[in-house]
Amino acid sequence: ILKILALIFIYKLSGAIIEPIANGRIVDSLNGIAHSLILVLAAVISVAIMFFMVVTIIIGVGNVTIMMR
Image (cartoon, rainbow, N blue to C red; front, side, top):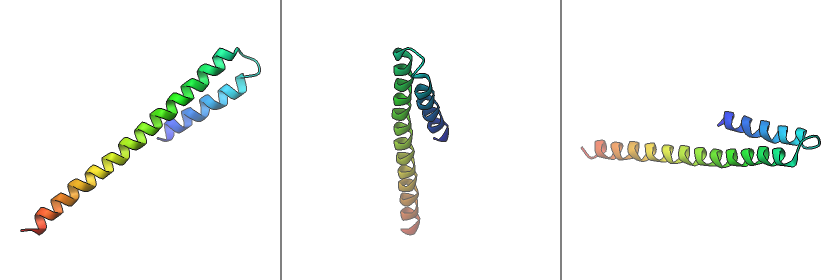
């Protein structure tokens, strides 16, 4: 997650630095890459949350079956 955040920051920063001297299409592509990485970050965070929820459910079900003995 931190690596993706660092990449987003780097692409946004490089787009801002290059904007006055470079072609607009290059800046747009860098901003597009940063936007795509934001979507990837959102997907990774949502999958991590779902993973922890599933692990919690599995542990809870295991504890219920042990308690019923």
